[in-house]
Image 1 (cartoon, rainbow, N blue to C red):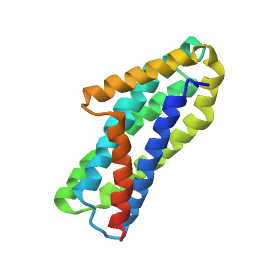
Image 2: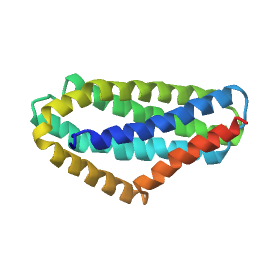
Image 3: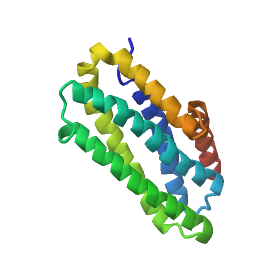
Image 4: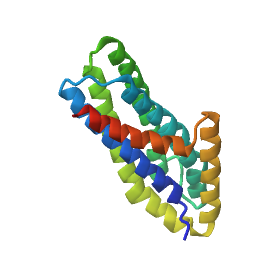
Length: 187
């Protein structure tokens, strides 16, 4: 049976894969290993474009309005909290992009480690809240419209990624390559 959150849960699995690679990257940076551009730039691309532009937009333009129609307020409670989390993710993501560029030009990893750790902690906590609280509410309240919501989510994903000139497959491969590249850095 299609759930209103199926597509979003798949996104979360992909995001968690990249978060794991980021945790390994932080460890490597702490161990004074040089992290090349071909690892840092995909991390930034994924964080900004897949997590924020694609995934958060799917939630904000489809799931949250559907929940609002089902009686959940958007100005307080779980949806308001998620919107604040999304804004915070953007802010940390922007800082992380700056500190990554800084690191690549200066070799100073202190701020990058701090920003990456902040991002990892924030996103990990955010995903937990969505997976264990919000999505359960959505699945309970949106059963009658789950097919419609699922189709909306797919449409939004396609259009957001098309605008970026990317595809879901691109980000799935990026996550896979990142996992391999990071583990090769550790050897």
